[in-house]
Image (tube, rainbow, N blue to C red; front, side, top):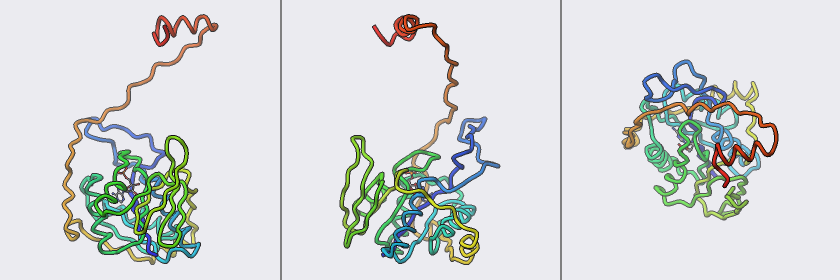
Length: 250
Ligand code: AMP
């Protein structure tokens, strides 16, 4: 049982994101970057499956700049066995990521692919679904529980009305939701060990994938500033404001 985990290097979730003055995107220079939080959950899940004796190898893959090597190292320190960096400085949009991952899957033949449900930079929530479609594999998205059982995997999904459990035949694609697990911090000995693990670097061209963007960003803007609130004296004043100012009740 080989598991492939896809991880993206994104702006750290604690950073207050700033829009560039020319509105073409967000400021990335001198900004702390980290592994996408949902992808940490994906790595953790794969490591737990290996620790439970259900998986034998965990391959970590990332598409991005040279610096994404550091992110792969973090995943290796959490328990991944080896890494693949598909290196490019260009913007790689979800469809191109899915195509690159498909090419990696064809080389590596994993039984299970685990991805985050979405990358917190673009909030696309597309790659897992597109990859499953390109491969013709079953998908279990927004997983809050994953159980490998024989030839299949049972995925409990967070859906609007509650939880839904589906059985997928392997090989399959799973995307992680927030409540699946709590990712571990890599220990110092494991960080040291990870330095010796292999990371292969490939170019998208070598995989025969054209990663040219298909979408153009017209402009990026800060959300409108919210007005401060006011305190009302009593319920009558509140009702009056809802009726006559906000006009949300008749
Ligand atoms: P998205 O559809 O862009 O919101 O991303 C969903 C998931 O796809 C992420 O949580 C990652 O697991 C994976 N992914 C997205 N972009 C990349 C990338 N550049 N490299 C590796 N995995 C990625």
